[in-house]
Amino acid sequence: MKFLALFSLIAPLASAAVIPDKVVTYDGYRVVRIATHGRGEAIERRLKTLNAVQYNFDTQERIEIAIAPEDLGKFEKMDLEYEVLDEDLGASIAEEGGFSPISASRQIFSSLDDLTSTGFPDSSWFNAYHTFAEHQQWLVDVQTGLPQNSELFEVGRSFEDKPINGIHLWGKGGKDSKPAVLWHGTVHAREWISAMVVEYLTYGLITGYNSNNTQVQKILDSYDFYILPVVNPDGFVYTQTTNRLWRKNRQKHPSNSCVGTDINRNWNFKWDTPGGSSTNPCDETFRGLGAGNTPENTALTKHAEALAANKGIKAYIDWHSFSQLILLPYGYDCNRQVDNYEKQMSLAQGVATAIAGASSAKTRFKPGATCPSLYKAVGGSTDWMQDVGKAEISWCIELRPSGGFGGSGFVLPANQIKPSGEEMWQGMLHLLTTM
Ligand SMILES: *[C@@H]1O[C@H](CO)[C@@H](O)[C@H](O)[C@H]1NC(C)=O
Image (cartoon, rainbow, N blue to C red; front, side, top):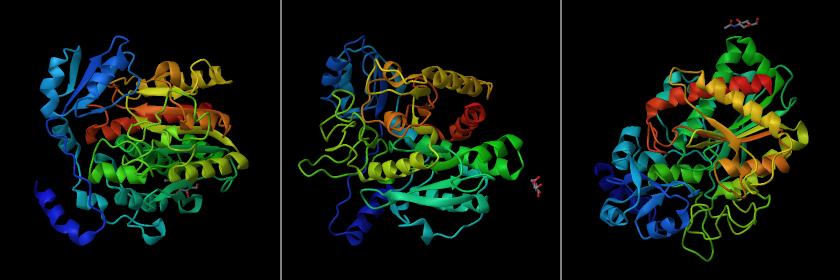
């Protein structure tokens, strides 16, 4: 309450032209999982009458959805079979450690060149979630750990003109001399854990290299890493200033007041295949008015094309949450299998085994092709990287939670950042030493 009052005082001074969207608190929202028994579409239509945010778009078996408190009575009357995943989403968001709209939107740097390092970060970074500006500072700081073998880069600008940055790491062969490992985080704005895990892995590569860990040195000597923790900066900032469950970018559309395109339905490969994305700008999976027409996608495509044309892309991973899945192409066609399916599947199984072995909790990740495992998804990054980018390995990894336990989906307690990072570090060591 306190920061809301402050915000309304300051807002008129800050901008006369732009009225900030109303902050969504999610206090009292209940997250439920509804069993659909193959009647997903019909149930979805009924749920559309509620003030609610749907989490998943594969509704054959289940629908996970956060329902506003004023509509809980109406939901009860629908008499659906469901279980409660989170009694009060607002309380979970508070526990996760949020930001005031002011702190989340202030101090965003137009370019990383505007920052100076505050020193190599320590691992306490992974005890909490962070604002976009803090992530920018972290990249500048972590780069100082490997000054001769790394550099920061910008692939382009977001719709709201924020920089899309990454860090490039290489080994003893020199810059740009080896096949690429390319990682994208936070394409879906609300999937906060993805940036943290990508950064945990980056931190492991740099500290491992510096401490003469022979396994890590061999990895960095074999591949050039291009790591982008936040590829959707506008959406990410919006999740911290305004709406924790925002997914898309913040692109405006000429003929519709709904905002945002799903960047991960916008890739220029079989983009207009029916099903698996939406043509309605108000939907969470809106594919955009043209293939690759989001500024974010344009920038990421250009970057990936350059890597493909140089030494090729050995492995691409798009980091998402949640469900604990390792997803291979294809998403656009459920009957098409990747040419090197056996190899990719066996690597993914090895990664899943390494993850399970990382802790006594034995976290289970399930590998499989996108369409049969998750749902038909058209215009996704992994299909593009496989067929157009010619990546040998092209995965989408859905991080914690599994869906049922330990957090209510996109809102994952900060004390799970380190365990998520550590299990994925073990998984990646397997992948990067055996692929
Ligand atoms: C790593 O090896 C280099 C070269 O042999 C050496 O200069 C450096 O002190 C070593 N670092 C650590 C942390 O052992």
